[in-house]
Image 1 (cartoon, rainbow, N blue to C red):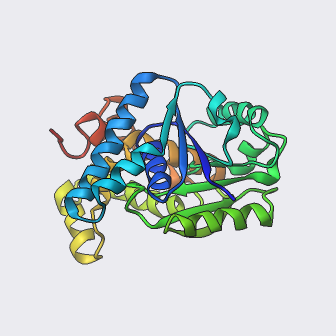
Image 2 (cartoon, rainbow, N blue to C red):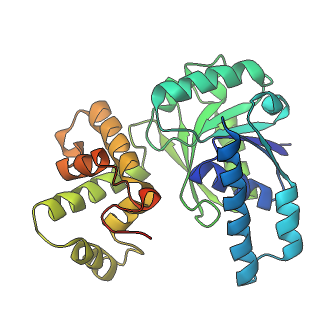
Length: 282
C-alpha cells in the first residue's frame, strides 16, 4: 500500500503535486536543490490551501493536517524510504536521466519512478535505470490541485502492473488517469502545442491582436482561456521546449516553433512567471 510519496522538484508543478497528494492523506517528502526553492514552495502551498479554506471547500483543521503531512529536504537521502516517486524538475532530458539514475540507486527495488514530463520520452528516461518496467510518465495538469486529468504515459518497457498501480493512485487522488503511448508530446501537448503555436503565428502575421485571438477561442470555441493567455500561464520557454522535442522527434515542420515565440523567449518575456509575455502582469 502506497502511503509515503516522494516528489522531486518544488516548482509550480512539483509543489502542486505534493499538495495534491498531501490533501488526499498521503505523507509527502518534497525535495529540491535549494532551501530558497523549498521555502517558496511552502509559501505557495500555504497560499493555495488558504484559498480552499476561504472558499469553504477545506476546513482549517484539514489545511493544518495537510501541511503536517509535508516534509521538505535539500537531499535525496530522505527519499530512500518512500513508496512511490514523482519527478517534476526542469524539462531537460539529460537532467531527468541523471536524476533517475540517482533515484534508482537510492530507492528500494520495487518502487515505481514516474516523471511529470510533458514531452520527453519515457523510454529514454527509463533507460537510465535498472528498473525500466517500473517507470512511467505521470503528467499532471496545471494547476494540479484543481485539474482532474493525469496523463499516464507507458514507455516501451513499462509493465501492466506499473500502469495499474498509477491508475489506482489517480483514483485515490480524485483524478482521472488517461493512458497514452510514448510519442513526442504524448496526447495533451501533441494537440495543444500546435494550437498555441498557430495562435502565435496569427499574432505575428497581424491576423488579429492577442485579445482578439483569445476572444475568438473563448467565445467561439468555448475554451476557458485563450491560447495566448494559456501560453503565458504555461511559460513561453516551456512551450518552445515542448515544440522542439516534437519537431525533433516527429520530423514534421508543422511543429516548428513560431519565430515570434522564440524571440520573446530570448528577450526573457516568458509569461506570468516573468511578468510579461503576450500580456503584462503586475
